[in-house]
Image 1 (cartoon, rainbow, N blue to C red):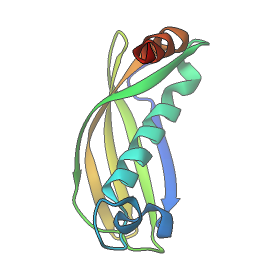
Image 2 (cartoon, helix red, strand yellow; image 1 turned 135 degrees about the vertical axis):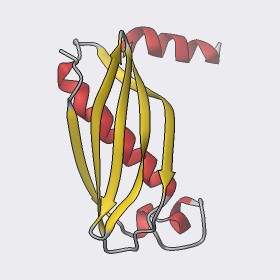
Image 3 (spheres, rainbow, N blue to C red; image 1 turned 180 degrees about the vertical axis):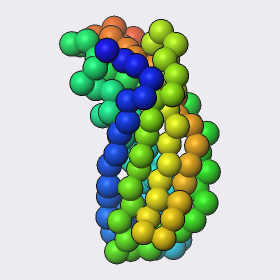
Length: 128
């Protein structure tokens, strides 16, 4: 059952594949903002997945995130999420991202619970 207080945690190592330079969001070899966003979404999504009905998943709908410090190649980055609001199908998470030297990002992330079949049917209808 989805309830306030569900927490998630995931770690990634900053390497050549997730830098601003590699992802095209900048020219420097530091953890990219798009990589941080993907880490936040994966952490939040996986934290609530065991509580969803079969055939349901969540999709990200809103992010309000600050990327406040750089993490160079070779540092491990940890994302922590906490579900702080449940409004029917709308889920709101408080998120923080840190490396060994402190916070590198924080903010809020919103997801919606969707029926997988209905969601994909609507998405693929755009091809018609």
